Image (tube, rainbow, N blue to C red; front, side, top):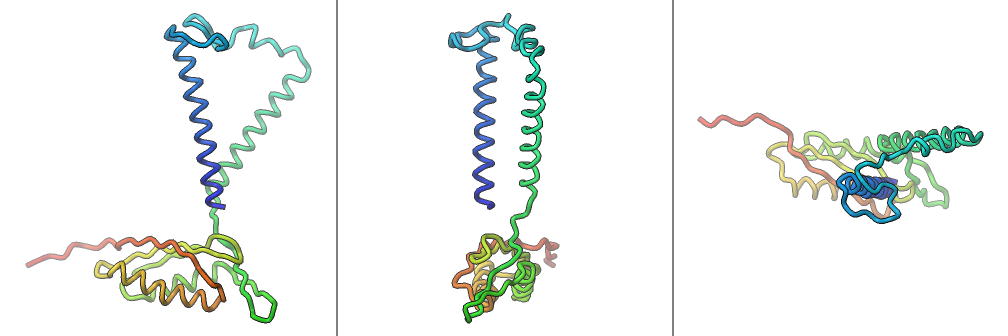
Length: 195
């Protein structure tokens, strides 16, 4: 869902930017009295964007105002939906676990996140860990943020995360793989005084 959302955002922003650049450039070219194509609605600096005739052309038609209101309402609803999707967290609510007898069990995503975070925080040199599950129920992915102590080695922290916390999670859920994106940050600390 996150990858799809990123692609939709890029396409929509690209199209909006292209339309704004082309429209604005055309209006600017006409306003500066540069040569514009013959099909362009504005041909010089004395033209207006909407003439009185254009503004009042459909006013007397019975279908005009309902169509305008419906289109504007649809645009507002789509814009609100897009805005709400931006703030929606793409966390996985549950993970499917194969029980080995042909049946499946469902594990809550928050429970697995909590166990992974506790295992990662118990590592030497890790001050705090945050875990988020993404992906699909049968093929989850994890995003791990590790806040490392000043003395911690990033390589050792990643190795321990992979061989302990993530290995325990894979074993307990029976997953063949658990792709993980790890982000490491150093905990802010006061500078040591040298005497």
